[in-house]
Amino acid sequence: MIKNKKLLENFEKELIKNSKIDIEEKFFILNELYKFAKEIGKFPTKDILKGIEIDIKYARAINGIKGANKKFSKSLKEK
Image 1 (cartoon, helix red, strand yellow):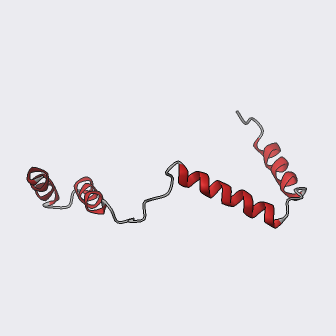
Image 2 (cartoon, rainbow, N blue to C red):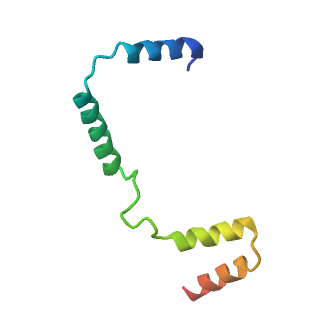
Image 3 (cartoon, helix red, strand yellow):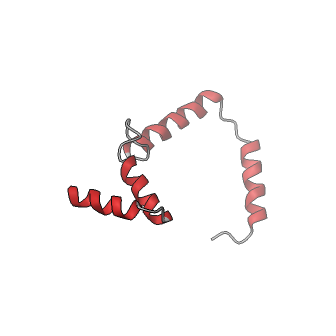
């Protein structure tokens, strides 16, 4: 647990200032982090609109748009 936020911020600033990593190493680290994020599924599929209809129906129901509940329940019965 962090008890002294200011001390941590100063440490981070000094660490960044004294870092001697060149640009190629930074890009390598970035690329590896990107690969890892893709492997664990933290990026959306190629079809980013997949499932958007359901999200819209949920949003309408939650926000109380008139008729949304009827349309939503009707579409669920059809499936």
